[in-house]
Length: 423
DNA sequence: TCTGGGGTCCTAGGACCC
DNA sequence: TCTGGGGTCCTAGGACCC
Image (tube, rainbow, N blue to C red; front, side, top):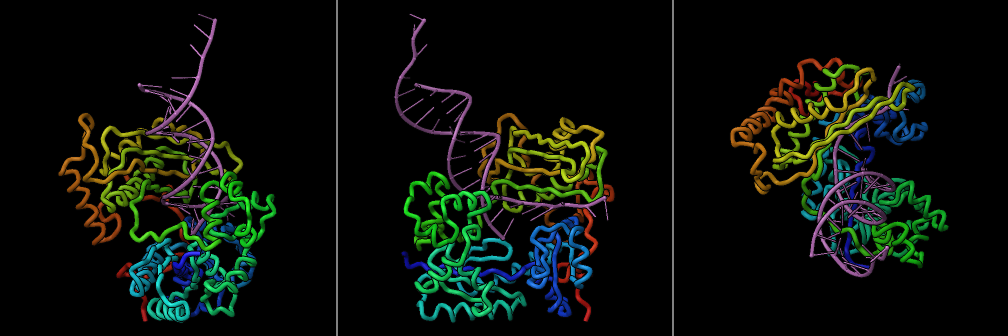
């Protein structure tokens, strides 16, 4: 057992809470947020969970339940969620600089050195402050390791008696939590591995902690499985990651709003996704040296299926949207077959390197200073005046043939001047 | 009619080298 | 006709996360 103290702060039903923030009338109504294209539920309030709507449930399959129970259903409004996420993280940062933003709605805090007696009160203060500053409710778990903090956080959310904060620093609470949490609910143990654990007779977190044959765990569940086991024992294996690492690959993909048959639409969509991916690439001052594209039909539909990927390694790395679109289109030419009903396209940029550190190629065409200046200017203008104020012509002007459906989207309350809340 | 999007890490096995 | 031992690097695929 080490003496570290990890705290996990996790926003409750995050996307739904964001929607409720500007719609106080929804406070007691079930709320759900859908994935892109209004496909599946990706966030649900407790009221919606109680109605039996599962995570990932396709909307059209549970629409009846939603209509009957007056559920407020929203299309995803990611610019809103990202903005509110930043506010939550900034508030947390005021409590400690030892903070890892783990996901859009979660952060680990390293509060090692705090007195055990007062730590819970301190966390209740964190919770109250976040809720006061941002309006987003959070749950907090406190433990010796990250895996245990996740576990404690689970209890904090499930047990109302905890009032949203639970510590497993004490042996009593720790035993209770370990005995209660199922193997498949441990952070890092998914469906496949929990099935394997059950064959070994391990059903609860406690049983994994106490399992004596470490070698077998290592062999069957790899190094990661062993580290999770140690974390359950209070031995910290996953350190706090202070700075956000640069992406090693960047993917941009969308399901189409309508069936697509023609190459022109695919070309347009891929150009748009490439533009998005390149923007992210340049934002982290990187270049990429490999491009992959992917197209496929709708696997849920009983129609002739077709799915292909195609990739190319570039001679010289680049972050120039124009070059990447050109390459992506050539890749598309090689795999496109007409006659299929396409549902989705994607682009992946990989072999990512730092812009100023990468090896300049003797042969290929390197990005010139002028190329970079042009891209930078585009990014600057788009950041200032809005997404796609300036764009590559290849992206097309009307995306009607393929753009996603979002018929229940809330206003951009905090990111668009024209959509501010009217009081 | 309608089923998301974006990531990371680990390992086994092949290719290759001396 | 016979055919060792040791090492590194890369990649595809699986599993996991939110």
